[in-house]
Length: 302
Image (cartoon, rainbow, N blue to C red; front, side, top):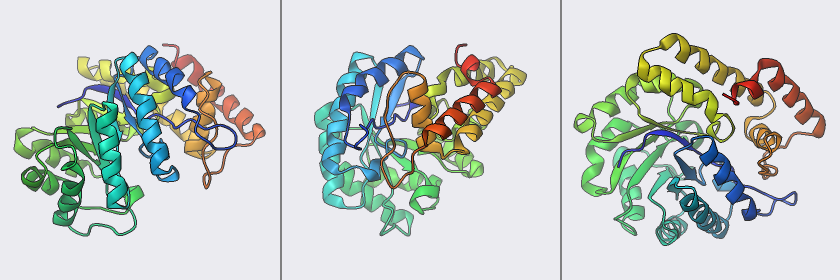
């Protein structure tokens, strides 16, 4: 399995009382399909996975499976958790919902301290649904697990026959290059740092998973096209616009700010769930003004 193009990491929609608002998922899916997104990575960091109960995550899988199929979006369900029973329940739910693949970040409390430990952990998850392609979600900034991902790929196949690749949200570009060479490029390396997408494309990634593809896909399509055509001046121009957008939102708290941007676009995702701190009405107005000043709303009309 190899994915290409933009894969959005969708927001989990909440009501103002922080309860799930699954009725909003269909609108999110329609918006993503309209902006040319190819797939979804459901219930990861952007989806606030560790702020949801397991039963809520299963409901989210079901909602996105239905909405994703209706819009022909490839569906990767994130099943990472800190305990084995919930992980396995999430894998079973992903299979039952009809997900195309699963992915998982490393445990974040009792952390694997070696590649072997990480492989053994994922073997216990993937054996529940060995037919589902599996992606390791490598995000050391959030999990605190920083291991040799290339070695994981080299040695993982024996214990993890469903292993197809990595969602690479790791700043080590040298390691990414090494991963690209394992088994002559057999694995699917999905680039996971939106503001550095061009770097990932230059290294050889064909697909990317990111949060800003929810609201700024039309900033990234020109990067993909220009890079393919060898027009690096245009690619760099649009990548700089991505950086400006993300920096502007991050100044207000990135994830709550990103959900506020979705609201500005008419795709209501509601607030972020505590302990994340949401923007005040004044901060939202300021953010919208800043985005207008840099040209964001014009860029995404392209």
